[in-house]
Image (cartoon, rainbow, N blue to C red):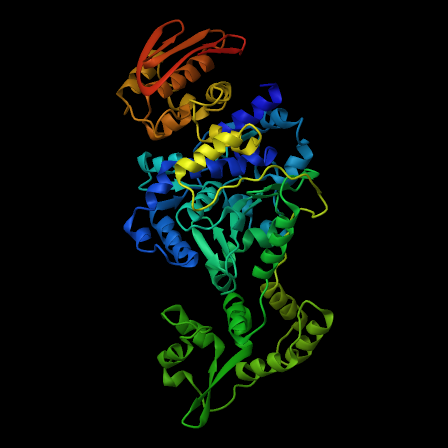
Length: 574
């Protein structure tokens, strides 16, 4: 590999936020690595999914959402994978993207977002405010194996992952378990978030562990409002798909243009809805300050009765029934008779009359005439009616800030795997196309398949970008580190001939002997950069030689001789 290839391929091992931003094909490589993993395929045999065989993808997706909610935590510990420096990362990637462009699009390098993010102090919300110097966290994503292994980490009771890991997991699981074609799934990355649009029925958006239908998107609840945050307030930096990617800063796009145009239409439809009374009720739920200007009217034995809107929303807080769905009448039945009055409340708009108005007028709030029509109707009651109209329009019509359509579309070879294929067939296919498809080739590095991959990227990552293991044993001698590793569980989090990186071993306190040898090599190299290191892997026996000799037992069955020289060059034989 030349230096640029090595940089990309070693990034497929560590998969930091910055690496994926610079090399966007890595995002889909992680998805393919998760699809190749046996873990998600095992989910198909669980009773909760087997009993849905033959059911619609919609039903399966909703069950998958509950499964992920139950089995995975959202991890926002930014220092899980240690610290690095801005200067080091900017120097590393300056040949690909300028530091100024990185600062405009990456949260670790100064990005704050638009006015909304300033108002809510988003950097403080995510814990980024304390990184106001050169030191920043490695914000890395995880394979499904590393996500599962969080259950071994102190302070965690289950599997876990951050938003990019969860987005990749959702794509792989939707494909494997829910039988959603990859062509129907689009990954959406913004500076502070990663989610997916699944193009079935009216559409679904994944949001960390959750799955959001179009109806849920517009229900006006606090959870839905948070789910909207990224697409409302951030630029989409990368869109990736089985056919390729579109990057906000790269002129060339490898994604199929028709697929991108289709996505733009479908996402636009998902993010926009008609103004109906139920949707308007959802708006009032989200904007409580306007509830005091509305009232509900019901018939009671032929006589009208009136109820303050905010009173009904108050009842909704503690009820299983909702204002804006089929349970509306049941919610009204829970309201105390004392809360109804026999006269129309002054200074309030009747919701039934408002419904008649919006049906009769059939106006579009995206047009000036539509805004004027509504403003004139409400201005006798609502102060600052223009603001009300703008906020209602903003609630029902969201425009995502997507990469420019006028890119130069240079389609790559798309990934063509289908839901009818077995795991083995998919791995065979990806092996066959990896020589002509860089994303497929990189997937085997993200998958950590050391039996078919060049070892150089793995070794480079192991001794250059694993700070947690170094910090964790800072007070130990080299011999003590060896003893600590020997006392550790000798099981890898990866099956077969796949290898964990040193920080995965350190974080999860488990690892194969070969993985432990790389961890020890990382420590020795950091403490004594002038020392030459040799690792001899002879199937079950692993020997690390430096100033001393350290033995480990491996179950990986690999054979290699690795020399790491004092000048930073490594040689691999075997």
